[in-house]
Image (cartoon, rainbow, N blue to C red):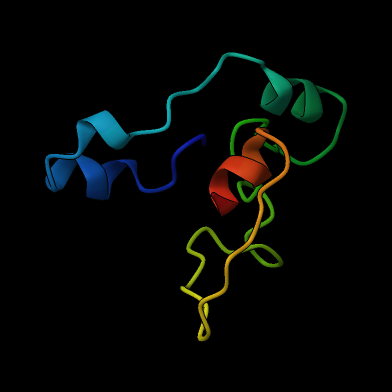
Length: 77
């Protein structure tokens, strides 16, 4: 769940870029509580209808400041 592109990365020889599961068991806890399987490491997993895994580049480049080093901040960076 952590890396939806694992197969593509293995085929391309990009094993070093695979997002590993961090073992938080958030996905399992959610399932056991009757909720959706969500991933703490990859916010888009389980939310694919509203949050795509691939974010296209912006049409207009801008300089921005990324605040935070959580999954969203790291993905944005």
